[in-house]
Amino acid sequence: MPTYILFAWLCTRVSLKKLLWWGTFVAIPQFVPLLFITSTKAALIAAVPMGLMGGMATAAYLDLMIRSCPPRLQGTAMMASSCLFYVSSHLGDIWGAHLYETYGGFTICVAMITFAYALIVPVLLTVSEELTALPDNEVAPAGRINTTS
Image (tube, rainbow, N blue to C red):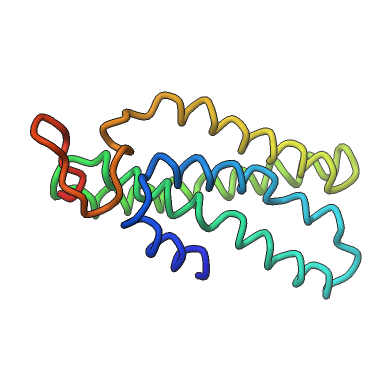
């Protein structure tokens, strides 16, 4: 929640492009704290930075998804993204369990998820400037897409 609240404040002041990049670079090493878990207490402590590191990116990706939607289909896109999130999470759980069992620990799992998150960077390079150039609620000049639909 704290990073979602921070995103809500920043998204009207900073372009989505900057928030996407900042959020992505902070989120790439999001699961590295797993390597330092030695107890249940350590896991609870590690969950705090992990959640904080991923929140900004998640909020920015959802904002991009909403901006990319045709008008009046944002709710449909939110439901589709929620479904795909759960499907990909559970497939990732299965693959992670296989990696953990096969290679003996969290290290390979952390390496693979960090690599997968790093693959978001080339995808961001393909995002249209018109979708990300403006902060939320800012009206685009004539001839540009209005991001407040």
